[in-house]
Length: 290
Image (cartoon, rainbow, N blue to C red; front, side, top):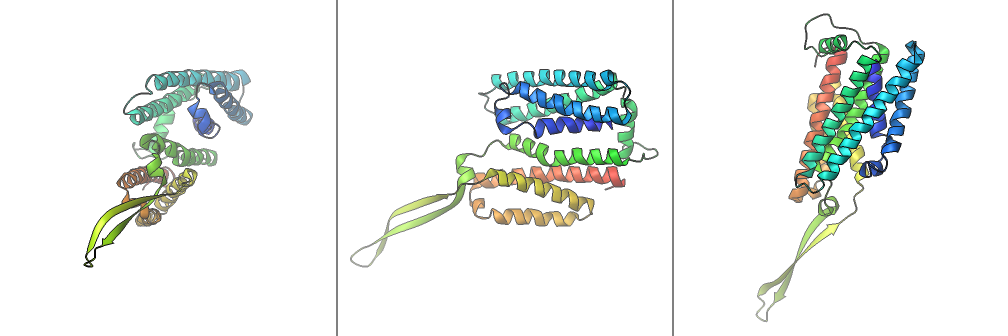
């Protein structure tokens, strides 16, 4: 329960309290970002302390200081690496790698702090996880209401905000042409000669541009992944195809642009892949099979 609580606190501070502006100006807002982490982790640890704690200094204050301090060190190293690689050709791939390593280090930090200060038995925890996901034979442990709720909340954040952020890093930002493309129309100017013969003199191509609110696309991504997870939990795998069809239909005009079509396809397939993984994992954990 403690590990899930701290992971949830980390995700909330990293992906909800940290705005896009703070991400772009990470060095400038690092102290504010660490304050958010300190406040949220302190509140979460304090709630656990009131529920089953004995020593405020060891179970609340010390873990908060360690988690925030190490988090700040990891983030500072990430800032340095990002600043030194601003001119890389394959910057998206590098940023994706940094993001994944950064989050893994934060999770490892949480596990280490839980083990050394909160006396969490990691061996027993990993044994329980292996039994829950059917990777080890043995009596399947029962999930408590509180643990189940925490796990659902963690999966909700992963399925929506975290996955959306990861996909955006992987694909990069939309170029102006791709993000605004609405349609392409060609008009031919025909000149008629005195003997009534038609001769094409000029051809004009117009690209119609329209402002696109990218925040709507983010919400659509959240909803599509949640729907896929819900359909998998209900066993309706075939219905997932209807979501793909509905999403493609709304972008029908833009499919004429090859760059947009490839961007759309890659983003959609990645989004659905993560949603399927989350759905299968939830079904295994709560129902024992997929």
